[in-house]
Image (cartoon, rainbow, N blue to C red; front, side, top):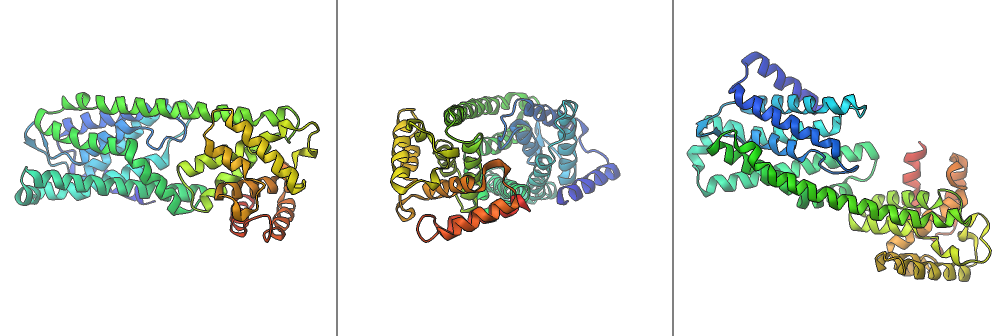
Length: 400
């Protein structure tokens, strides 16, 4: 809603007052549109799918001069050009049936609008040049503004994710702040450098200074592709118990999804969530060593000694796969008393027991409530109460 209001106000202002320096506006608009086309090759879940467009938008927000000539486009025109470029760049994605990335555009509008409101009025009024000149003070001002803009973008991204997924806000914000050290910092640095370069060399600096960001984007996407392949390998290993008939179809993936949701609910983020997901996917792999399968793979109903033996066998198998040792430790400790377990093992144990008790993917509200009650009855001995209550909140959102 806020982004829509800002966009309407910006477009109305441009229609009323006209476009200042139309050549600059066109060049930056085209640059942003081309940058938005890069979403075509974006990796699913990528924090900034169009970093080139983001850098171009930020550069226009921080643009004071072009080839030595002062500009006067103002904050409203910045927002209007950014929206126009983003919409033009989204046309091929809409034609392909992907639909417009409204959250992405809203974030871009509000973040760039923040930077433009902080910079453009001070520059146009002459206050910025009068107080800071073009020396170290000006560079420090840009640095502080970039930091504030990056923080604004992180908060907006966390708010949008929180509204869409229902996950707690603070863990999401920590994830977003951690991501700023990667492609986020590259976008901010490139945007500032592009603005300074255009001030000296003119619009020819736009294509020249986008090359470092393109290389950075390529490196991040290769890294993301390697991580995706790694996860697919772990998921394939986890399916071995299903293919062999030891567990119900989809059990490992359901436990992994529940575990990560509970982990987010309890404040885990980043590498801790990745470790939790991998351990949840492979938690039952020790069943492959059994001569006779456990009925429906429900290990939660076995005696403690048998659960312990299967967990140790699973840890031994995981250690042979090249998966990090921390994953094997979580798998090995599933059957320990919960007070002796790390948090990841406690979460996997509760999620696994819930899926066993609820009957898998066909569980309705009645089955879920019955399973939760049985888990609550076991909180004094087998399950950590905080984990069970976090699971209840997650299920409450899913089943609502």
